[in-house]
Length: 261
Image (tube, rainbow, N blue to C red; front, side, top):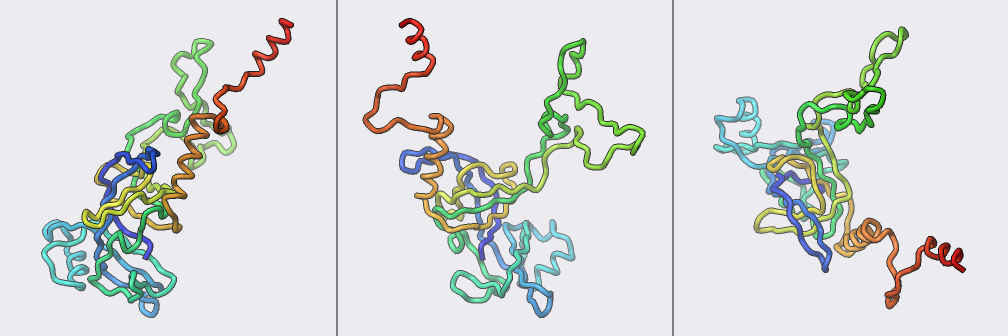
């Protein structure tokens, strides 16, 4: 099992060996196994996970019947997700999953692991082409003071005489299924069922997320990446050698000195 369901709590920051890293706090599990899909019956291997709970009166009758197949209960999962496998799914102990089993974050993740997080992005409402697609807009010159954020012509001429599907135009922005990759696990808190993930993840606070481990890793790998990023962004990609406190002279100053000579 490399995937778990969770809920976005919010963002904060932590320090890893004097490096300040923005992190997202996520409530990861515990998830309950609701159903097992088997190759001989369903044609593929999969595990259906349930996360959080809601009351029976807020659950449809078909879903109540589906959940009661596993165990009679007054509360039912709020978030369901089916995770596919190439072979028979097994837990951390190497035993085949059974209905009713519990999956927690510590069974899957450890500090430094690389993960991808999938969620529904924030809704932005109706947005124009500049905000939605990054259009440059038109010029203010020649009396076009009201066209600076306009998309321009969208017509295709007499042939084909219509606007092709998928044309980039203004419209409702956000609420899309979005995946952010190459994030690192900063910490796994077993007692709180929470994990800290480097960087931002899709969705508003309280949004449901799906986290999948994509590679094994360590915090040393994260430190190298962050240090490289800081050097490239803030110091222009190169740092002076140790003990070299003298700033390098610019070529412009050298040219002026030659002219004076």
